[in-house]
Image: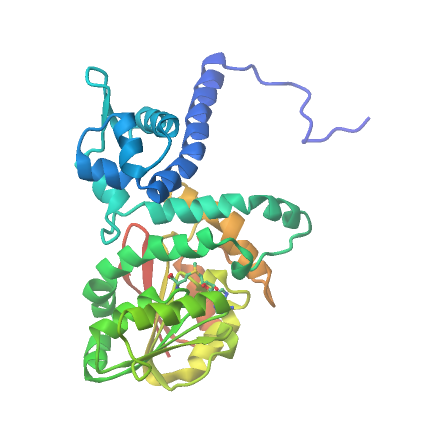
Length: 364
Ligand SMILES: C[S@@+](CC[C@H](N)C(=O)[O-])C[C@H]1O[C@@H](n2cnc3c(N)ncnc32)[C@H](O)[C@@H]1O
């Protein structure tokens, strides 16, 4: 006779109330899952902007203002009301977007802006069937192999936070860096994506020069266009298609990496390259998702969202590359410290934190 701990012979009694609690919680999750697409729909069709700009609206009026079918507007509004995103007034049959929700759903400059977060989640979920197949063999999927909602949503999600924090708080939290930027420094933004962080820094520090690099050619093309749109000349800013381990130039006074180190296949190799290209008194600012060092530190709503992105987006990105270390989106500061120490850096400090980010100062 064989016994195994995988197949207990006694089944614990079922607590029916706990079972139904869990089922009803899961019903809420199904509604939230569908709401991801509904938020992208409201953003793309202009529903939220119309509600924000016109006060209480009936479905027919929302449809008219947005040039959409009334039955769609009506069902979308009811889903939004059931989820508490809009308020419904049964007496007038109208729907209102509360002022605070209007900020979060329509103001692209607010750090509370949400549609970018939903857009990257939506794009990620749309590509999930590919991940299900790849996960069987532990294979990866490159950042550039995703649909454009992932890339555009990423830019729209992160940019407001950078616009709010980067120049006002994060750079001043680094030892002596703002002085150098004001006097004229050489800066490299590694894994720059669409370049929003690079452009914000270039706009703030006209005496300094900036290079952004990324392994994804289409993102670099977008970053170049964004710099032109911002009126920044080639003498101030440039973007290159380069994997982090092949970064060129230097010596740099400041290297920055925003939400990209954990996406890389070889973060130790990237860190070694930064070490080679950084001036002796230079600084590497690594901005990573907010995370603690232990799994149990991250079992909260932010950790949940990031572990989701980690499973479907960031870990596959790393696994698609050479080395494929796949540290995950919630690696935590201690793991990043181990990586940069292995690459030769000796000083490491958490310089700033927000609910969404850890800002790390790394020096030789
Ligand atoms: C989550 S996005 C962040 C983009 C940008 N830093 C931002 O904050 O908006 C991660 C970026 O890392 C880039 N990336 C991943 N692996 C890379 C590598 N090995 N070398 C350079 N860039 C890489 C991806 O192409 C992608 O643009």
